[in-house]
Amino acid sequence: MNIYVLIKRTFDTEEKIAVSNGKIQEDGAEFIINPYDEYAIEEAIQVRDEHGGEVTVVTMGEEEAEKQLRTALAMGADKAVLINTEDDLEELDQFTVASVLAEYLKDKEADLILAGNVAIDGGSGQVGPRVAERLGINCVTTITDLKIDGSDVTIVRDMEGDSETIKTSLPLLVTAQQGLNEPRYPSLPGIMKAKKKPLEELELDDLDIEEDDVEAKVETVEVYLPPKKEAGRILEGDLSDQVSELASLLRNEAKVI
Figure 1 (cartoon, one colour):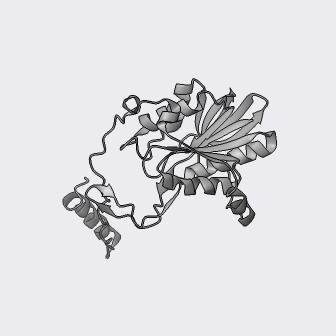
Figure 2 (spheres, rainbow, N blue to C red; figure 1 turned 30 degrees about the vertical axis):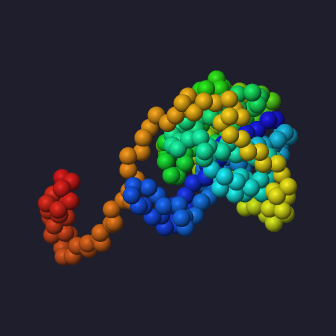
Figure 3 (cartoon, rainbow, N blue to C red; figure 1 turned 135 degrees about the horizontal axis):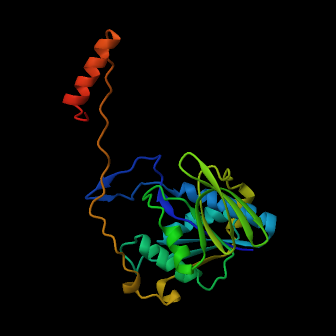
């Protein structure tokens, strides 16, 4: 089975992030594989181990993303591809990323493509479905279970507090939701093997893509941190007095009622 995983290099939101002049400062920031993409990598490895085939992880961005690709290889992926856009594109949006990835994948005869449900830095959840649309293949999002029998596929997907079961067929693109599996940590042998696994680096010219054709359609005007939360207040006294005071505070201070 020919399996591809689309991954993204993202800021580690568990670490402190600094914003200056409307941009996130990368100096000193920690970068990781987007956590939802880790579920996609793990599922791809499990599918390969059960059905045979090969897992290729693909990302777009700058040369620094090689570190995240090596991590995916250490988890168990077979090959990695970096589409380096550092010298070609100043801004990337969902249209740009999906267009480039679909152009790369169009002749790869992929049976199964996996991606994270959303990226924790942007949260749009658009890239996976856009890629599937451009490739003209089936797409199911937010999956929590995947069963493959030949070319037939049975999927359970998250439905905001509920779930639904879908039957579809390969070729297929799915996006992984939390609960699909438990991503493995790279082992020491896996890390050593990853150093010898193939990592291909491509540029837009290698894909015969013109920069103007994939120019971002969305402009980021400003990036800013949320306001600092104020300390909470504890109301005292009789319950009826607390209710009256709470209603007054919500009306006069919070302005929500």
